[in-house]
Image (cartoon, rainbow, N blue to C red; front, side, top):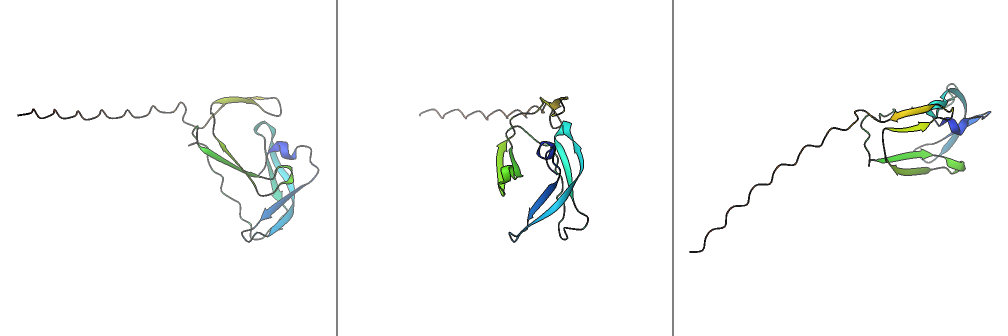
Amino acid sequence: MTNFHVIRGADAAKVTVTGPSGKTQSYDAELVGYNPDKDVAVLQIGGGAAPGLEPIRLGSSAGLRVGQTTLAIGNPFGLDHTLTVGVVSGVGREMTAPSGRQISDLQPEPYPYPEPEPEPEPEPEPEPEPYP
């Protein structure tokens, strides 16, 4: 899986995988699906050409909250082993897709967030003892 803007207009694609031992292997890949409005594309490594590789499970953004840390692993400009760290800065925003279509209400569910529980009232301090 990659971003559509990364492969838009490409005639060919290669996927390079680094294994746990640090050894890298490159595979020819084919574009099997894309959605420009969501800036997403799916590449497939040629049938059976990558024994031992297992797909990762996709997560869910349903619990995403402003302020949480995000991680993006990629290969910008051919710089491998790249990790970008960010912070969720907002939900419920609008954006324009590469196709020009307006996408609104980008947010995890539920929204608005539930009100936080009120803090309990502090216990009253005891009266001081009088001097004899």
